[in-house]
Length: 470
Image (cartoon, rainbow, N blue to C red; front, top):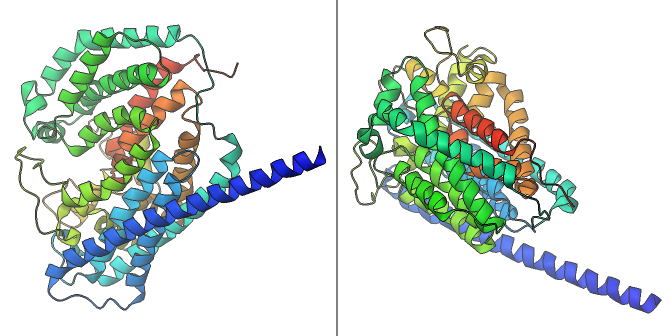
């Protein structure tokens, strides 16, 4: 008997060693791929700079460290017993905007667009702050992963009637079908659906949040309905009405028509739908995550966001000379303005928390952080990003950055590890997958309303309906 127990322990130890060796190998391969990608991309993008700022300095070394940390953490998020999709998306965002773009701005002596507004010291401070965020987030994720290993469960261990959930889903679907036509007409009708620019015009001409409310109504409800039906059919293997499913799926695809809508809308609608697929197929998840840097850095401008025109991929990949990659530079400009005494403590957070108050009532309501920075710098174009590090810094300075770094990792880790606990967690995780780039890139004020509306709808569908272990 004792020999048998000893043999079992030896076999388990050998299995654990093999699994550990396999994970280390996968982690090394994924990290190597990402580092090689960053190396060759930066080599190609900086080739056209002409004169390059001296690379042998501490800030450049810190920027390289940011790239390395993000690469390691992407691989760490993908090789676990359960793929941490949300965390891998977070680290992919950091890898691109506070790794690759960070390095590009530091070595570019003549950056275009916002680059001419910041001093070298501002760029260096932004680099150090980015490293502080990445390091804090990485340590937090590793600590949480070690605490939650015993709680990870790869399958839904539940089998309970879905009557209440289905009934509420039908009520929501009927309410949407009865009201969506006048709402769509209100925000532009066919121009909204098929012509680029109508969403921007709506935001610019609206003095109250009615346009944002209408837009959230039109895009959030079908996204949640489609994701819920796909979840019931393909994850829980329950039957659904295919006419119901296909109708909302087609409508969701129409709403995500890329030439007509901002990328934030397209991502918000499409990624939650694919989340159902990625949670079932591990390799597909890894492939999708690892392809994101290629898509964002090489193909993000294939469709012109203002006129919908399709163009060939540009040969100029210099992120420091393109407005779509302004997150790092906005952080640098935000640090500069805080140093100059702008942005009172928690002022921007108050505006995001009370997003539902119209400016006609609250005239001193804070502007989007990106818009506020644009006005402070005298820019005519004001649709600028305000990344999460900037939002945290302008509200609570370095402590805010430290706190938000931990908070973001905690929330993403929570839903990565518990999405298979109940329907509420699953749908929240799916919506987060489509919203994460919007939330991380900012501004927070613009994203808050849509996220809050999504959470309320999901709570309505799933309240008093928690699948529990039998």
